[in-house]
Image 1 (tube, rainbow over the protein chains, first blue to last red):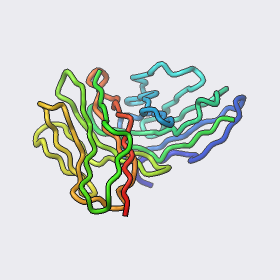
Image 2: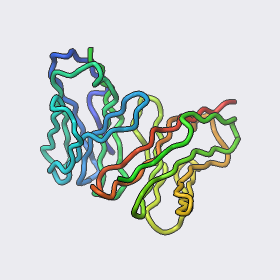
Image 3: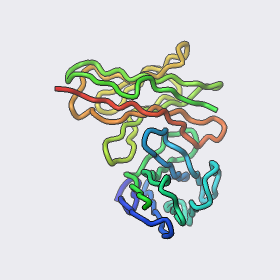
Length: 112
Length: 114
């Protein structure tokens, strides 16, 4: 596989569930990102990892918990979400800072 | 922090007509600028980028953009629209504070009519 791969593509979960989103990049990049895309809102940067260390955390609620076990994999663990958390969650990677990001196809999350 | 503003949330053009999508940036340092395209239920795909050097940047699918410092603009153009160009387009700027974040505009939805 090439590029950035996200699984699952679609996820429906109840507010009491725990689930995880997975992202894998095959580009040899050092940085990985989680973005949230809601209807009628700009893309929101959630988390940034560089060389497996978190470098940014933009005031994201604790019900979202990222994990970066190595430079190729990134997870977003979800628990006790709210309906307003329903959105498209996009993973991206980049060689480093001040460069373009390469995006996965996203996970469409619906919280019921 | 650096930011971008995309003028017009919806743009409609006829097939074969010029496409012009507007983006203005706000930055206290020389910006790195990007245009992305998003098709329905897909991720974002890089169209083109400006870092340094030539101010007219050519990208994929016949798109190009010109960096104009005096106007703080980075508008996206294509001479002749195709039906397949219908999508959401996002302008973005690198955040010089972090070096990692891209700050995106709200997006412009391009409709191409026959």
